Image (cartoon, rainbow, N blue to C red; front, side, top):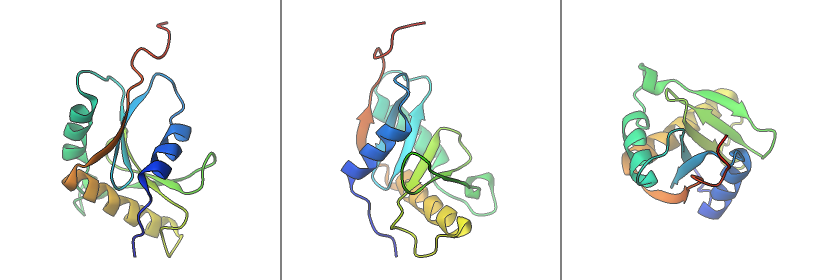
Length: 133
């Protein structure tokens, strides 16, 4: 059973995890975050394009691969995929089974939903917020 994490909670978690003032990012409805290392133009459009290509999971291919990172700065996990800048948050109350494989499969299914539904819920535009080096 997948319980939804509300948008405010997700936004707060990602703001803590992505504290670098130079990193812009876009959050999707089910907890997937696309970090924009070269943000340009409309950030939601840029992130949607990335997630459309790298969000849907295809078992048996690189798109089905995942890694699980237990968080130190927040409760829960981040599930990685085949694109370094596409990350999915799994909250501590979401998985019934807290094993790495169960958390990873849940995160992958959330990324798949975000990659097919493509519903943006938050844009963190940090362009110009840090002094240029």
